[in-house]
Length: 377
Image (cartoon, rainbow, N blue to C red; front, side, top):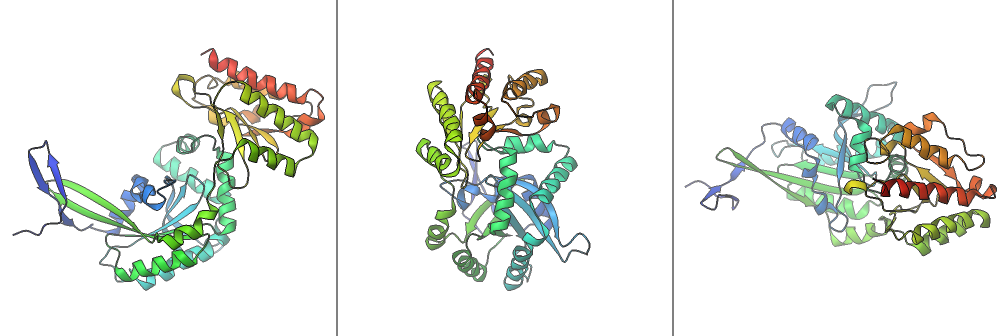
């Protein structure tokens, strides 16, 4: 009698297909699957309250100085939506190194990652991966991020996380042995802000079908409580104003208040950011059901203009209309925006708006024009 796994596929409510345990032919199978389907990293198991989403930076990532031969090669590097680097090392159950040796290998990666990789190099690796896959890096990142996150914010967050040692170390195997689970749980409690987890990807097969069942290990209650403090929470109006008052002179705070009061008066829902260090807010705009965020107020002391993210989107996908958008914000005295700004993310500092007697009025007028264009679609 064949062994049963307790996993079945129901076909048209007529027959049960028993799915039996199956082996991955090689580690390359793992790597291809993870590269193609980052959702196998099951971000909802990693963080049930704030499910993680992942984008691939590179498969087979070398860790070493540019002027020397790299000592290590990481199987995968992913980034989650908050810019946390996720280092993935893949081993099959049959690999005898799946215990202490692979743990030491991963700790080597983590200890040396900061020395060899920064946000700029990671962004370049991401672009190269997208180019190889025949996709556009900017489009891929825009689709991955959710408002109010921007590419500039994202890469800044990547750099901040690397400098702070906020990494996620993820062991992946078709079976996670008890010894490795215990090591992972211990490290996840002790290492903060780094996170250490193991992902078991069990494969089952039957009648030409394959089922993959992912399970994450290492999330103990103690580890979760220790790391809760570093998670970002959504900003509020009061918190936003308090941050401006704490960081900037009264003239700039007045501009920020005027913009926020105007946003509230539009009657549109306001979206507050979730940044750990800097907050943001903007009115929600969804022409043709697609969310866009042309400009937002940030506690960095700026109004950020997201020209690049508007490409291919409703209303401002047209270059001439983005050019007019730029012209309106450039009416603030001292603000320099040119054609190169249309291919990136630009900003209007609140300090310059405060120095212009009509600066706040000009900013509000530019925002009003945005809303008028959206309503006209």
